[in-house]
Length: 298
Image (cartoon, rainbow, N blue to C red; front, side, top):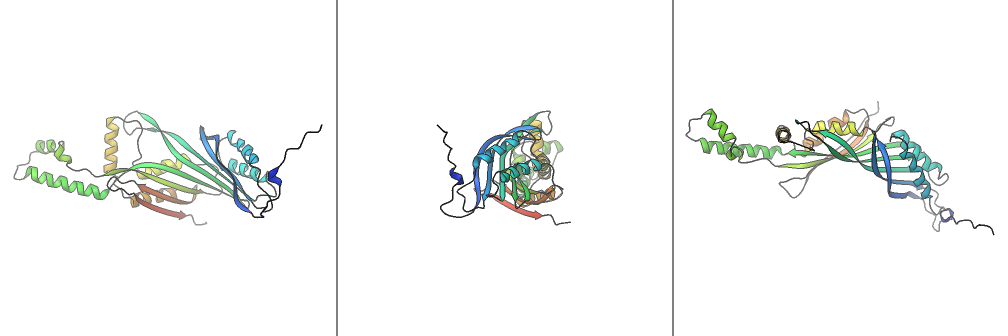
């Protein structure tokens, strides 16, 4: 008795002849390797269905091609190989291939003063496209930081001045009395409002970029902002963090401009869109600023 041939429904003709821009799978679990780190990731893999007569694509072929990502560190060249495998396995059906990888990059961060250190996660997405043989890679990175409002700081300083006038009116000032006052509750009768803030960076890499400079871009962003959130801290670190915030007041517009200048200095960046969100403690709404830039052709 001859074995029956398994049916291939995807190879059958479509009931309605119509091309589709993207067909594939989302949320595929897989391990990846970035900068020596073995990370758990989720992938969205797909191709265009340009043959409108075809019923569908071969999703299992996309799934099997993702095994290439388990073998070596993630680079633009490896991403292109995977996308080319997508297209080779769908010859005659597809001209464009897409891959999005979502993961959390783990970086160990030292405390500001003490010898402590701790791990921070940075949500990142890597999106690669091979469209009509044109290859593009985009990175999406979220960076969390603290922001202290300059307006609120000025208002707080004014209230402290007023309290000083009230407490020392018609009084002969003595150094030790002022020093004691500054360390008392009256010395900080008002404080400016601060908030945990986030920068969402969407970066289009240069076409000839050989690496995925995730750590470099994160480091540059945090250096530009100056008040990245901390991990393990002692009181000395908390005090240093308070000092950094007090000397680094910023509106969301300031943060967006700092990041704009920092990203422009990276040779790996071809274009970017950034968005900063200050989740205000004063208001129930957020303060937001955005900026875009594209490098001119040389």
